[in-house]
Image (cartoon, rainbow over all chains, first blue to last red; front, side):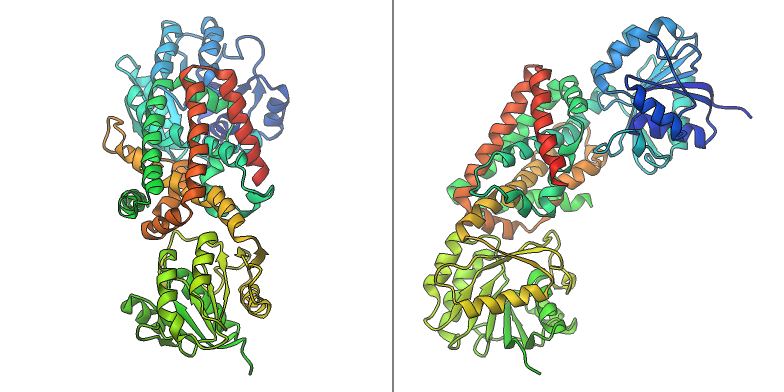
Length: 287
Length: 287
């Protein structure tokens, strides 16, 4: 039996890394999957669950034999981990990642990558409100998009191998420029997360006149703020690593909010309805 | 067979009014349900669907024989409709409503109400992104909250009859002060709707560098903005009728957003994580 990769090391075996490990094993793409990361307990759980075959040891995270290394820890740790593992990567090794930011990160990783190794930047779009290897599932990426952001210097063969992994996972693979990726996801993902976190804080601190008002929150509020249950550590990293785009997009959102606020404060029903209608039309077009 | 009400007139036979009509008929609470409103086509559809028994005619909306009148048109129309129907209400008639705002509205309706008639203000909390009588369902209110906001002058017997209708619908009935209602729902419902409408507008107008970026919006974005597909007309009315509370709550939300923006712009990971963690903890507590 021939594998796409004999040895794969996944650094960060949580929901995403663990689900990818399950795909690699279930589809027969990898001979052996090594998992590593900072939580020994979680790695032992991954072994018990059959998600990985072994735990990678030492400062090199067990990448010495890896044909493919997957960075799946919080995105803010990638550059430091790359610095740690770079001297230990074998010639021809492919590194890929699942980070929600790309532009600057891709450049930083490229600078640390040893000659003779290859880097293929990736971003699978999958629900991340839950976390942990216990939630890992082979079908997590099924029918979801996965963005790959190769640059002019990305090795074509390495790109094709990583692409095949995501295709096997059932993902809809799209190629996109890394900086464009950060603009797009700053708008459709990072901004809504910031807005949901801010909404939770604001509503929790409002003086409504009753301590129990949150129990009256309906489905709309719960849907709106569901993503605010996401990992604060992960979102801290994403926000900071896409800082420039994100601040711009927050400013645009503040402008929209202020416009509706002005319409409401002025009691201008005609303008308010026009603005709400515009938003509603776009949303209905998304279904 | 004895009914709770011999004749009921529902003004505005859409999702909410139509669902309530279905409950009244299915549970044997009403002898005859008359529907009226501005759209003849929609009322004829309601008859064909068996939601109502007859269409109410004329400037009095067919309330002449009604023991119960339900105001279920857009909330901004209630006071004008009350002025129209007041001279035609029979002695002892009960008026109730399903409006998402209460405080000022309850006072305005109270001022128009004829002596010898009763008003019981209500607000069922049910999904309203969809609309129209075709979506009306007997189980729409099942397991959902319904807030009633009686005042010191509310007739006890009328209150009890309206309460029984909502209990029969499967709703969890809560009593609350009308002004407190508007503070609470300004926070947990009206503010998130404004935020979702503003998000759609902002994201649609962002320059991301690609025309097709909305197709990359994941489940988080779609959940977040789902409520922005709600009726602009209805939300215009709600926003304006709860203007004072809502502007206050938008201001609090703007402050939260500005705080996160400052953390991000300053690259202050520690403060940012603290603020995100706070929000995430509260959201997780909501499950």
